[in-house]
Structure formats: C-alpha cells, structure tokens
Figure (tube, rainbow, N blue to C red):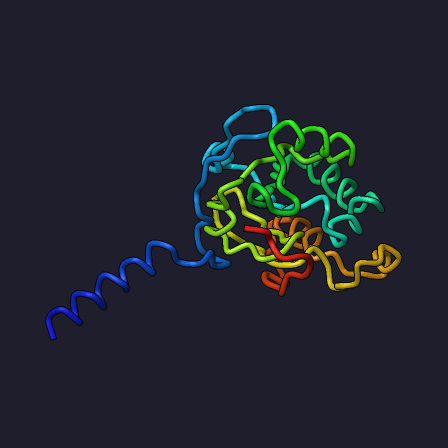
Length: 198
C-alpha cells in the first residue's frame, strides 16, 4: 500500500512539473538560440507583449499565411506596437521541416519573415513544454508574463490563402485587446495545420 501511495505521489509531482500551459497562468520560461547564434530567454522580454509562433516553412498551412504575406503583415504591425515575435521551429533532425540555424536564417530571409527572432528547438523541448501540436500554432503572452491567448491564427482551417480576407484573425484580435488594456475576448481556440514533427 505504501509503495502505491509513494508511486502516486511521485507521478502527481511529475505531472505538476510538466503541467500544460494554461491561459491566465504564467507562461513557461525557456531559453533557445536563434538562427544567428544569439540566446533568447523568455524572461528577457518581461514588460513586453510576446507572440510565440510555431513554424514549419514546408507546411501548406504555414505557406498559406507566408505566401500571402498575411503572417509578415501581422508581424510588422505587431513590431510597430513594440511586440516581440518569436518564431519557433521544433521539427527534429531528419524530420520534415527541420532547420539548422543556417537554413533557418536562409528560409526566414526567403519568406521575408518580420519576426523578432527565428528560434531553433531541434530537440523539441520547448514545443513539448508548450504542448505545441500544429504549425502554425500561436501563443500571446502579456507584459506580466501571463499567457493570454493560445490556439489558431484564425478561424478558417483551409490551406487556401483566398479565405484569409474573410477570416477572423484571433492573434490580431488578442493583440488589439491586450494593447488597449482590455481582457482578450477569445483567449483560446483549437489550432489547425500540420503536426509538429518531434
């Protein structure tokens, strides 16, 4: 009986240690290197609004938003308002979408990404920490370090970019709300896209 109890307690503490990110709670901290070899810690951006974008440039759903310039337009508009935008690639070596720092830098330039940094998460540690399941999948963190949005970029899961003008952009709405000092009206949605290739 004691063994079962101890095992249950250990499992309970283990699950607490890797609890899923939750809207309204502090965003999990992390440190990753970018495609230029510079280290970025989430804690470095305390006091700023931060967007995390899980990216895989080979995914048709990511291409939908990059080929149409929808993602870059959103990134640039966010940057003008002082928002930090971190694009994260969690594709593992040998898996589709994996990028080295060098290839990540080239792809970022090719697609004209306006993200603050492209972060390489080849071991998937940060992706799993955030339970990122798709590309794209989006997270918005407020200046206090609280997760205030998690989910899809918009409300249309078609890979066709023609649907973008008539889609509701959840990330833009979340940023508009928080930058205006309002609670985020839609704090959580189901993401869509390609599976993250851990």
